[in-house]
Amino acid sequence: MSDKIRMMLASGMHVLVAASSKGLGRAVAKVFLEQGASAVTISSRSRDNLSRTAKELASIGEGNVYAVPVDMTVREQVEGLVDRASQLMGRLDVAVYNTGPPRRGSFSELTVEDWEYASRLLVLSAIWFTYKVLERISRPGSIIYMASTAIHEANPNLALSSVLRTSLAGLMRIAAMEAGAMGVRVNMVVPGIARTDRMKELVESLAKEKGVSAEKAEREIVSRIPLGKPAEPEDVANAAVFLASDLARHVNGAAVVVDGGTTKRIL
Ligand SMILES: NC(=O)c1ccc[n+]([C@@H]2O[C@H](COP(=O)([O-])OP(=O)(O)OC[C@H]3O[C@@H](n4cnc5c(N)ncnc54)[C@H](OP(=O)(O)O)[C@@H]3O)[C@@H](O)[C@H]2O)c1
Image 1 (cartoon, rainbow, N blue to C red):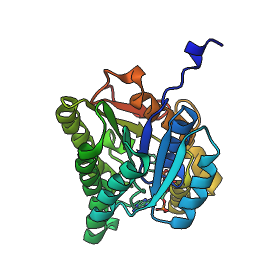
Image 2: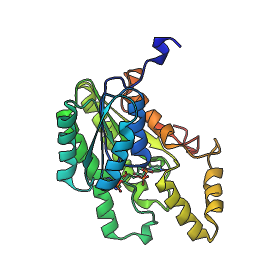
Image 3: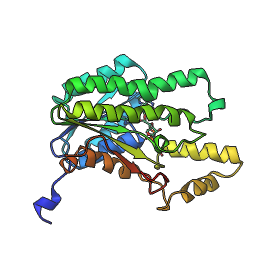
Image 4: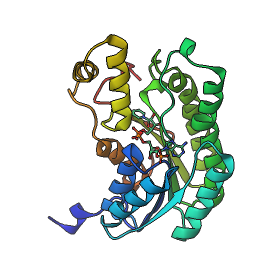
C-alpha cells in the first residue's frame, strides 16, 4: 500500500473528548488514536472507569492519553475540563462534545426536576463547553457535537432527548457561522442506535414496557434499521474523525447521520 493511501486522518492532532470512559465517547477517543492523534484527553464522572479506559487507550497508537474527571452538569467542571485538557496536551485542535444519556420517558412520566437536570446535561453543558473551547482552540480547529436522531424524528419515549437536543442542533448551526469566520469548523454526528450500554438500557426498557424478552425487544429495534444491525460505536466514531480531518476541510455546519438508514426524513 502506498504511503499516500496509508495517511492517517488525525495525524498529530490534540483532541479532547467529553464523556468518554465508555460507549460512543470512548470509541471516538480510540479511533482518533488509531488515526494518529498525538494527544487525547478523555473525561467522565467516575475516576475508576476513567483510569481503566485511559490505560486501555494508552496502548493504542503513539499518542499520549490524559484523563480528567468531570461532571458535565456542573459549569465550573466543564470549563475546567477545557482549560485542563489544553494545558495537559499543550494545544487543543479538536473538541468533541458528548454527554451521558438523559432519562428515558414520555412527557407525562417526567418531572420538572428531570427537565431541569437534563437541560444542564444536554443544553447548558454544550454552551459552557463551546464558549470555553472557542477561547482555547487552535485556528484552524474543529468542534464536533454528538447528538441523536431525536433531533430529526421526535420519539415519544425519549421526550428529554427529542425536545432538548434540537437546541444542540441550533447551537451547532449558530456556532458554525460565527466560529467558521475564525477558522473553527463546527459539525455534528447524529447517531441512531449504536451498540453501547445505552442501547442495552433502551432494549431493557422496551422489553419491560411490552412484557417481552430482551432478545425480542432487541429484534424489534433492529428490524427498523434498513442495514439490519445497530452501529458499532466505532462506526459513529469514524464519522467524528472524518469531520475533524482535512478531508472535511470545507464541511462546516453539517450533521452526519449514522443510523443505517433508519431516519425517514428526506433532508
Ligand atoms: N448508544 C446509542 O444508541 C445512542 C444513540 C443516539 C444518541 N446517543 C447519545 O450519545 C451519548 C453517549 O451515549 P453512549 O451510548 O455512549 O452512552 P454510555 O455507553 O452510557 O456512555 C456514557 C458516557 O458518558 C459518561 N457520562 C454520563 N453522565 C455524565 C456526566 N453527567 N458527566 C460526564 N460524563 C458523563 C459516562 O461515564 P461516567 O458514568 O463515568 O460519568 C460514559 O463514559 C448520550 O448522550 C446518548 O444519549 C446514544
